[in-house]
Length: 204
Image (tube, rainbow, N blue to C red; front, side, top):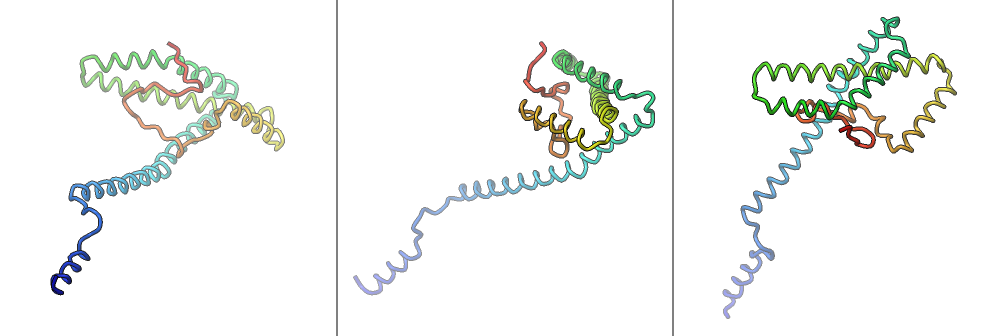
């Protein structure tokens, strides 16, 4: 073999890659995968910021405003009444979950009209507001009852907190201490009247 031919073969061997050359389809798939991953991260960041700086302040403002209005009209919202009424409404909503969802399913299967859509929207919003009032009364009533019997003393407050925390740990329900921005629910069409309970039991 001539020196020129041997040099050409060496240069060709150096320029030839050891592994297989990626196909254009594989390159496109890799680029799409990286782009999708970056997009998911950006959406997750945007979702977290929106929940933290928009949803949470609005929820807190609703709670604080309604709570303050009840405080200003304390004669109409005594502690025990709020606590019992809030607990009763909570229990009622829990027992009516399946019947309300069944009625909602039938309403969606019926012929659609503008009035039926508006009526369903109003019922959903009224239900949500009534549920929020039940939560507020339950919280405020329990808070006022504890203030009535334990005042603002440190030892009773710590004792009650410790006892309640132990109960949550034993029932594996500590996550119920979370609130926005850690838990955000959206107004989706499916299962408007559903909400989870401790043992996921159904009444029907």
